[in-house]
Length: 170
Image 1 (cartoon, rainbow, N blue to C red):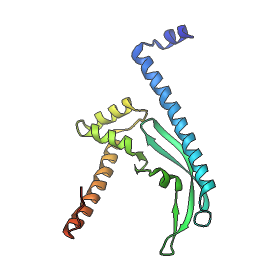
Image 2 (image 1 turned 60 degrees about the vertical axis):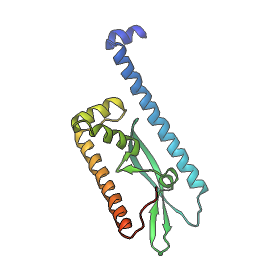
Image 3 (image 1 turned 90 degrees about the horizontal axis):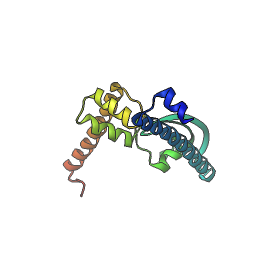
């Protein structure tokens, strides 16, 4: 087997390291999918059935440091205090899932760090080689734009609080 690997792929240590990293990321993606599915089933079984009405499953894909994680999650119908109907994902609430679109906060952080010192093309290349996630320079641009919008919203809220003399204590 080793002879075949060495002769077929011409593996040196660097290529071997990349192959094993790729396999590790694929395994981690599968494990993450299993964990998310298990958590979602648990929440489905233990939810307050009077408050949260099961409305089926929806597929989604989350872009993570390990790669893209496709999974199904259950959507629930609930009633707001105002009497309006709302749809929620208990899994997202339980995990305090914070994403930019479908990009995990960890991956967005890595992208922002790299984009602060490199071009978007270099950032895309760095992120693609250092994580299990492939991203284009356009994808990097989109993440940076969404981060900027979120920061702008936070600054506006802080400004309004400061004007009302309700600044945050640190």
